Length: 292
Image 1 (cartoon, rainbow, N blue to C red):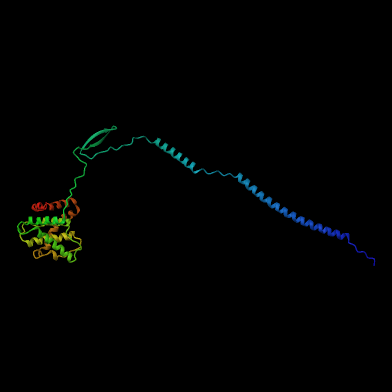
Image 2 (cartoon, rainbow, N blue to C red; image 1 turned 90 degrees about the vertical axis):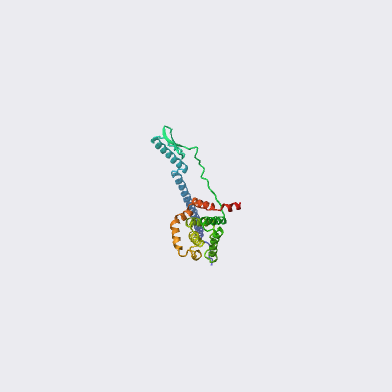
């Protein structure tokens, strides 16, 4: 048929143009991306630079060091104290004059002023008073008590100290066996207490052993009531036929007369020592010589 097929140059050109347009689009995209990266980096750098400049420009006043502040306060206080001391008048400080408690006083002039100075006498001693120490066993004090009763009741020729001690021990043993007390009452201090009551109550006119026993047992009841470890004691061991009618009369009479001394014996050690020594001196001289 004679038809010739050929490629149009316009089409080729168009394809080349399209290819170029596509290439330019890629380039433009890349350029845009690079431009955005550049912009972001430059913005960060700009912000950092501005922060550095602001940090350099802002310089706040530094706080004073604590040591410098303390030194300043100390200097101010010293200055104030100097000012107050300069204002005060200067007065000499009074010095106390030592004194010694003696009987003789003399006047002495010191620093233009009269003051009293006491001189110590040569006779007076500063040593504390001598302490008297006396010792005695319970058995020895019981024998002294028995000797006193025999000496006081001289009309009772057959009375001996062992009988008086037996009266005392029988009552104490009875109270222990009957359960009225847990421990024995007979001790040196209690024997001294019994002697105090007997020395005032027992009379030298007694001529009956039963009467003497009744009076002695009444004194024992009051001694147990005052000095005993228990709250109360029964009356039966302390009563007999000779004193049961006058038991309470005698008890009240002893209390009214001896209550102050009974309390003093427990409160005043000097009084106790005197009574103790008095009881010890009641020992029969013949018996004491035998003991030696």
